[in-house]
Length: 364
Ligand code: SF4
Image 1 (cartoon, rainbow, N blue to C red):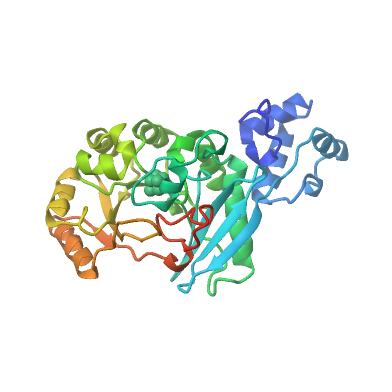
Image 2: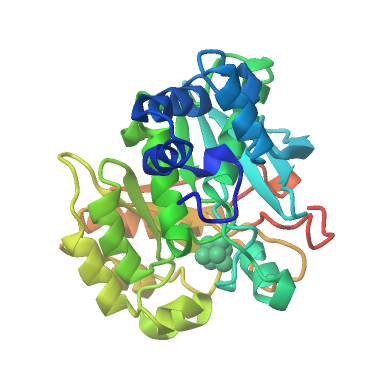
């Protein structure tokens, strides 16, 4: 992002943007590195915290309207299973939800990339709410600073000791509200800062981006954000079924998507995660499992099976546990690694596909 764009939140700038800003103010390039360090590594709360900048530069930045924003924590809800949903509010009144999920020695933070999701997947509360939003109320991309703000807000809660046995967020997944690859520039820039050891310092192998299958952007991501993990929300093994469950499939059908996954540049010993939400009587038959196995041949992948999480107004149902296990076994027999993922936080509307329920006024 360049300084000519309207944002004045310094955390919307990357290294190049900060360098351009310092140049425009007649400052030496090393000032950009100092500011970057304060913004992303030291996590300064305000421009006045940046004590190794000259007073005149700090005054000038403030006089020009630059600031360090942070989202407002509107709500935090703890699930009976120990996970926690945060609702964060931004300057224009938009909101995003993120979820902290403790698990043995991991504390995963699931963040949102948009203020909802317009893709309208049939099994997803976020999509159903988002598809109804149009005009001025349309779903928008979250900015780099808003993506960073979610991580920082979660870190504050973790430091308060709310998650016994966990002192820091260990893993970050972009699987919350929104399609990250429709917000590619901000997301790639955010990932760069997140995984920069001179920036926020998270390990790239502990960051996962999940997409509904925006094929051109998958190719772009493979070039621009190497090192992170890719997950794809697949949920069907035929175009007919996927067109219905995930309308984005009409634009990027399975043949194109699978080809992009086969060609995706993976680091050694890494695999793409295929997410498959199992819906009773819809995509959970033996035939579906066999079709899925056939479709994924030659894709370096593992499969996560996620039993559907019901939400108000949906007619879909969760399959019986035995059916889920049967589906898993069929995939195992075909030689795949397949896990059943227990949903976390369904009682607080924090499980997969349930985010955005508060906006709709439906408290799950
Ligand atoms: S499943 Fe993902 S892509 Fe589909 S509507 Fe929900 S948030 Fe959007």
